[in-house]
Amino acid sequence: MERHFDEELIHLKQKLLSMADTAQQMIHYSVEALVQRKESLAEEVFILEDRVNQLEIEIEDDALRLLALRQPAARDLRLLTAILKINNNLERVADQAFNIAEISQRLLKEPPLKPLIDIPHMATLTQKMIKDSIHAFIHHDSELAKEVCRADDQVDRINDQIFRELLTYMMESPNSIARAVELILVSRNLERIADHATNIGEEVVFIEEGRNIKHHL
Image 1: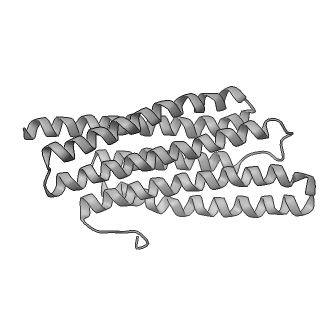
Image 2: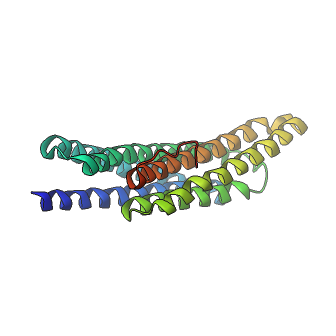
Image 3: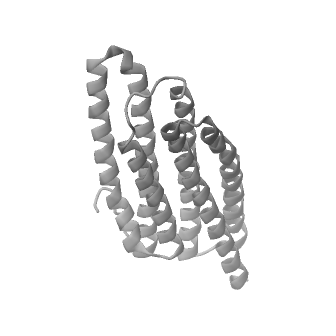
């Protein structure tokens, strides 16, 4: 029975990995829709969201079934609880990417406000954070998980920088306000994606080291 339980855990981890890969694609497409001014890329995000939603349901059902039927002890219980939390964070990452895709669609109807440099850079960082956080979970790598948590500071700094720059645009040109606000919302959604990756990283450290590093890295 223990071997069967281990096999089911491996299957759950594979689904989490697939969900994380899809969420990364959604981040990429949502921002690239804005950078390349291609609505078709935003539409790809909406298609991929269905896959994430389906995976979220499957992972939750499988994890709850294992909790109910196997009644796991200690470490396995923490592992299944972590899977449920990670599942929820990845679903919210997909929601943020969906939001960005919707914003991109709206902005494509307007002339570009400015060249986009910081937002694509921010998107690349958040994609790496998601990838690394899941890799840390799968491979029990608490040091990599801590790196993910530290990377959140860099994303926060870029978010603040984007806000200050766009605030200047709004003060200098009132007709830029609507577009600037939309770009601020893109940045805010990316910052939240980084927060979800950080949540996963913190969960990995808790599983592997038995300590809570929230606010104490």
